[in-house]
Amino acid sequence: MGWSLNIGSIAGTAVRIHITFLLFLVWIFGASYAAGGADAAWSGLLFLVLIFACVLAHEFGHIFTARAFGVATPDVTLLPIGGVARLERIPEKPMEEFLIAIAGPLVNVVIAGFLLLFAGAELTSGAAAASLDNTTIPLVNRLAAVNLFLALFNMIPAFPMDGGRVLRALLSAKLGFVRATEVAASIGQGFAFLLGFVGLFYNPILIFIAIFVYLAASSEAHMVALRSVARGVPVSAATMTQIATLPPEAHIDEAVQTLLRTSQSEFPVVDAAHRPVGLLGRGDIIRALKELGPDARVSQVMTDSIPVVNRRAPLDEAVRLLQEKAAPAVAVVENDGRFLGLITTETMGELLMMRDAMPKDAKFGPWSRLARPEKAINQGPIA
Image 1: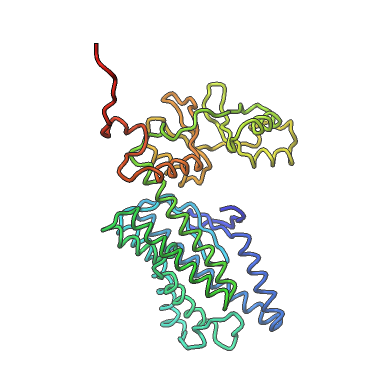
Image 2: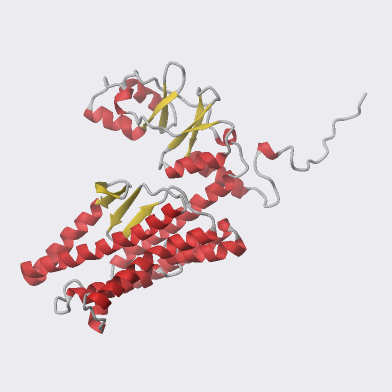
């Protein structure tokens, strides 16, 4: 995730902090200091850090359960509104998704139970509020209440909360994965509108959370739709072959000229044998001009790891690589490794739009033309 800092790793999963989270900590400290002085500021900051430690534990509940089903978990990012654990693939078996989704809230329940049973915490009406400036209530009470709140809030049956994933897992058995995702995403978007409306009158932070929920639900639905349209489709059907490439020894000013005369935003970098060795994006070109000047080589600034897929592979394999590697493009190669073309998130989006524009009873794509019935073509009399 962009604008985030890597602060280390736990059990092989990178832990990242988004820059907005650091700004949020500074804002909380400043507001508490202005309201109650240094003691209140440090107390509020400590409470907030402990809350996000519980959020991190929540995310690792998802992570360790996902690993048990063979799903890799590259990183987890802390945001002002919670944490986001990135899974390299979405488990489509309902039971797997159900267990992965429920694991996070269960961690919060366990933490709250531990605090209540062994740390002397008590649940009171004041602790339930768990406000940062309410230092009259013992910290352990507020922390137990917050963990219970996190468990309950995350179980709201609206995407992308854990409850939405649980709902999708339950619906998948009857509706199928794609339709279940659409239903869960729609509920999530409806919940986002409701949350935003409440935020207009009570708390502006709810508006920010509503925007995040709406965008996350839309993104999940779009991702699943892409995987659906890719099934049964060959990679060659979505490959851009009319595309400009760059050699690694080219100067950046040559890349600039190529950028200006094409509509591409990503340029494959190929070696003398025409094998893909990297990818150069528009942002890389601009950054190189600012930092290194026009005489810099493409090899100095390109991304040297580009996912590769054989042209005979199914398209859903390319979609999986785009999602798992968080890559802007996948290189399509011949059997001998020579570069053939690119598949990008933009071309996949166009493929999805074409699919949605077709009649429901029509099969999608020229690769299925032979499989569907054709109207008789009047060829005239046969001599």
